[in-house]
Length: 549
Image (cartoon, rainbow, N blue to C red; front, side, top):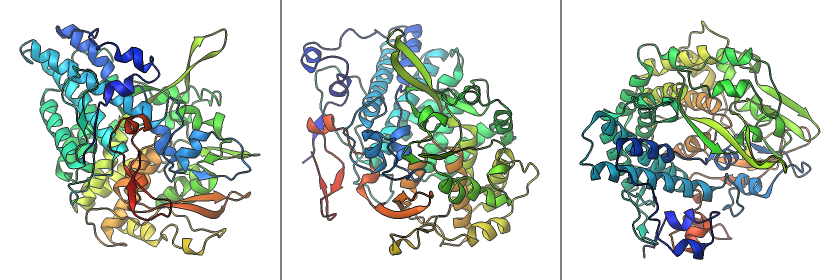
C-alpha cells in the first residue's frame, strides 16, 4: 500500500516554531508574485541554503577510520561514516537538506504560478525568470532523488524515487505519493527542456549565484550523463566548453602561490576558489555548513580522515602515477598533516565563514560557499560520455586537457596506450579483503565497477579510460561529497576500514556492497513517522530488505 504525506510544511515547521502553533494557520502571508520584479526577487530564495556535503563525503571512500584511540569525533559523524540512518541533527543533516530542497521547490512553483497569473511568460525577462524557476525546481528534485533514492537504472522502472511537486501547497498537510526514479527523471528532463532555450543572464546582479547559461548547461550535462543519454550530455558540455576548454578550467597554480593564511579560515586560498569572476565557477551556492573546517587544517585531527594512506594509494599520488609523478607534481600542493591524532592530506577548497548572531556570547552559525558546478567537472563528464559512446580519442583529449591544467606537466601527452599501461597495470582495490583482518589490505585508485548498464569487460580500453575519469573526478571533487554519486552510479563497493597506529589498514568492520540499500540515504525520521514510505533496510541478521518506520 502506498503512503502519502505532506512534504514541505511538516518539515518546514521543524526548528521554526511549535507544531501546534504552525498548524493553527495556513501559510497565506507569502509574497504575492505578481510583477516581474517580485518574481525575480522571489527566485533568490529558490536555491538551497543547506548542503549534502558532510553526509555524502563521510559516507564515501574518501575517508577512513583512524581508530578508537582518536577521540575527535561527533555522534553525527559516527552515523554518517557507518552508513547508519542518521538520527542526530545539525545544519548538515539529511533532514535539513530535505526540508530545504522542498522549500526551494515551493518557491520555484510560486514563481511559476505568478508568471501564469500575469498571462504567461510574454516578455524576455519573464521567459528568463520562468527558465530559472524551472531549473531550480528540476535541480532540487534531481538532488533529492539522487540522495534519497537508488541511482537511476534503465532496467528497473519500479525503484522508489521521491515526490515531484509541480504546484504550491494551498492546504494544510497536503498528501503526496512517492514516484519512481524513472518518473522523477522524466519530470526533470521535461523541466530542463522547457527551460534551456530561454535561460539567460540579463537580470542577474551576480550571475554566478543563479542558473546562468553555463550553469544550466552544466546541470544538463550531469543530468543526461546520469540518465544514460550520452549524446545529450556531450551536446550541453560543448556549449559550456566551447572551442577552448582549457579557458573554462581552474588555475590551480594561482592558488598554490597564495599564502596559506590561518588553518581556521584558510584564506586567501578558499576565498579565491569561490571568486565569482572565475570562468571555472559556474554556479556558486551558500549554505549553513562546517565543511570548510571538516576537511581543512582546523580539523585534521578528526577520527574520520582523508589520510596519508588514502592520498598515497587511492587519490592524489595514485592519480599522479598516470603522468609518472606524485603529490608534489600537482599544480596546487596538498596540505599534509601528521602528529598525535593527526593524519590527513587536505586541499583547501571552500571557506569557513562564521556569522555571529550574538557577538558578545560568541555564538552564531558557520557558513560556506561552494561550487555546485564547475567547468572542470563538465570537462570530465564529457570525457566519460565520450568513453561510454566509444569515442576514445576525444575522451583522451579531454583527459589530457584536464591533466595539463591540474598538474605541473603542462606539455604532457596522454595516449590510449599510456592509459592501458598504467591503469591496466594496477590491481583492483580490496581484492585480498577475504583475508581480513590484515594489515596490508590492498588499496588502489582502481576499483571493480558494477554499473546497472553495460560496459566493456575489465581491462578493456573503455574500462581503463572510465577508471581514469573516475580517479580524476574523485580528485577534482575531493571534500565536496560528490564522490558518493559516482559510488552509487558505478556500483563501487567500499569497506569501512579501521587504521592502525602507523596509519595503515588494520581490519574491516563493514562493507557497502553493490546493492546495499544504504546507498539510498534514509528518508528523514519525522517524515517517515508521519507516514511517508521509508527506504528499505536489511534486518538485524542482514537478510531480506525490510521497511522501517
